[in-house]
Amino acid sequence: MVIPFSVRSYLAEPAVARPPVRLRRDWILVGGAAIAAVAEAALRTDAGWTSLPLGWRLASLAAVLGGLPALLVRRTRPLLATAWGFGLAVGTGAVAAAFGHRLTGLGTGAVLLVTAYALYRWGSGRDGAIGAAILVVAWVVGTATDAENLSDVIGGFIVLCVSVEVGLTVRYWHAARERAVAEAMSRERAELARELHDTIAHHMSAIAVQAQAGQAVAGGDPERAVAVLAVIEATAKEALGEMRSMVRVWRGGAGDEAELTPRQGLAELARLARHRPGEPAVEVAMDDRLGPLDPAVEAALYRMAQESVTNAVRHARRATRVQVRVTADGDEVRLTVADDGHGGTAARADGTAGADGYGLVGMAERAQLLGGRFTAGPVGDGAAAGSGWLVTAVLPRQVA
Image 1: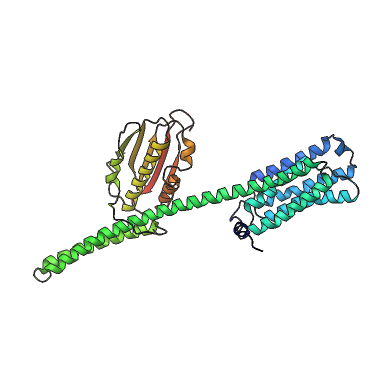
Image 2: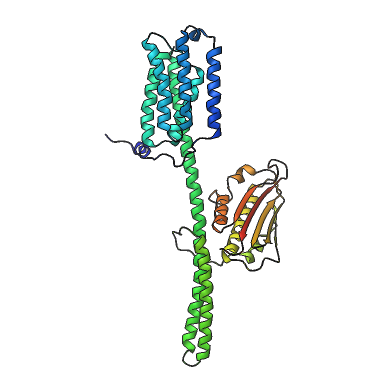
């Protein structure tokens, strides 16, 4: 028998790593469901319920209450939670049917469908396959013991399928988003690799030129050759320092050969200022007290400012001005990019500035690698007119 590739791929999937254990809302859910179940059992007045002997009504209530603790382990042990919750409810109904009673279930028991959702949201592929068998058995037994007509049969099946589908949809949506974030971070590291390549290539070229000059004058002018060696030493030390600085923050590699391009830093930051028709005016201001900065920090400031300006121009509705400021702050340097746009926070909160759709993710990753801090969000009430958006990055002057 040939198993379709999609099925085989699903069966090979591991459980989602590091799921939340128990959250406060889990206890609230269990407590609220328990209260609702007790209230339903006490206040329900339909004939199907009141005609049952008291003992079986209590058994139906006990089945729901006994299954509620499964909600507390639904993320870490989703298969166990599903088997626990559905097995207890359906098993109680089957025992009642064996004694000649049609056990009408409590509506509150529908909360146990959360375990079916959790199984396909957090569980492994093999757990999902086993859980599917459990759900089918539960549907068949539940239909035989509790369904009154065809609509109940079809409705129960649809409800189970919806729980499974929602779990799978949320699972793959989160997985796709995590892959996109990882790709954005990888591209940012690749950009750092290109900058490292450019830095070393520049210094090595200078060293090669000086070495050639030293060879040319070594025979006739030894003093000049010594001076050339001093220049080579200084250049090599500078290159080594910059390389160490960038390698400390660079994790990963560029898959393609980087092109030689000039390093972009504070000198190029002023070029972001512009005033084009139909776009907000971009103003750039830099503190005179900045002093020398680590080359990796300068490159990061430029990239973050460029990304933030692009973000503001694309997503800040009715913005008239974007202000870029770089100021000295002790041993740190602070970059702020603010606009006076109206709303637009939903798009920008997802980091949709860059071509990869995760501009904010890349900026935050670069700031973290350099040992700095990064924040981005609306100013005040993000929905208010003219509230604007503020990006702030604080980086060390020198990478430790």
